[in-house]
Image 1 (cartoon, rainbow, N blue to C red):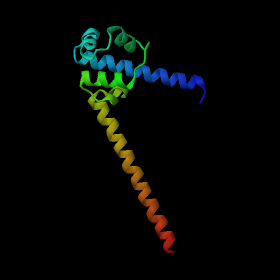
Image 2 (image 1 turned 30 degrees about the vertical axis):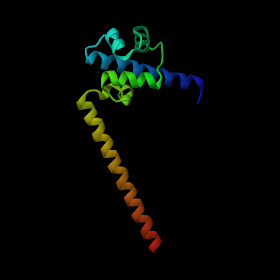
Image 3 (image 1 turned 135 degrees about the vertical axis):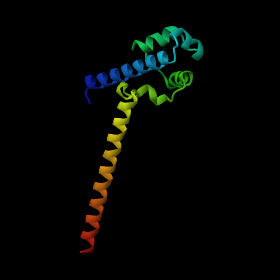
Image 4 (image 1 turned 45 degrees about the vertical axis):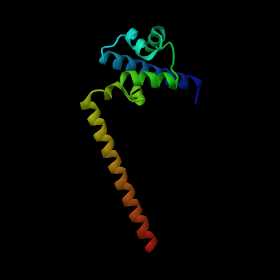
Length: 118
């Protein structure tokens, strides 16, 4: 992978994390200063994370998740899936794709089994 592709990917992950951190913080009606007090992470660092100027360690992700009462992976969920109806559509589509794949695998397995019997 080229460096520019890698950099764009890293930046999009940082942006997603920053947006979700801000969204979750605001959803709980916490200021950056209040979140700082709860987590022990400095206000400046929280501000820098939300502005994509600093990145986080696993320890910081755990502290933020604990303070916001979320699972760590929620910082990495695309914002369009925050809306329940969009999330349900996504999960239905995902479920349908899995069922389709399982059906295809089952059909292929049965065809392969019939070939062996011949």
